[in-house]
Image 1 (tube, rainbow, N blue to C red):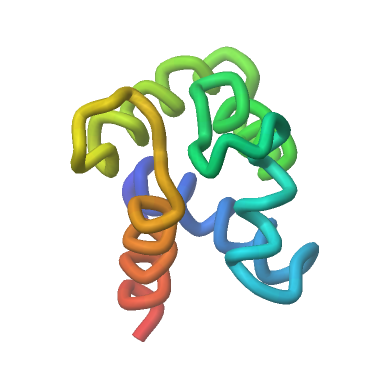
Image 2: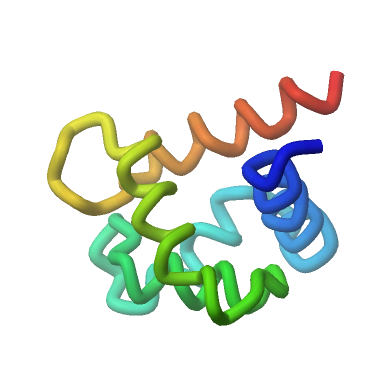
Length: 92
């Protein structure tokens, strides 16, 4: 399992174990209710997923780069759902 896969797996475990739905997880981490996750909100998600503090900033930037389809530097619900669906597909 690559590092990216390990990180995505930890995020999946966090969401599965703590939230009823991915929507609930998104809403929980969207602290300012902007309907988009900012880098600081993604870092909070990574912290709760027990991603090492040293790499959290790097990982959050890479997640934004990889999933921010509209280029606004934020993760919308649609982009978050795409990431969650990608994680789920890897488990099949």
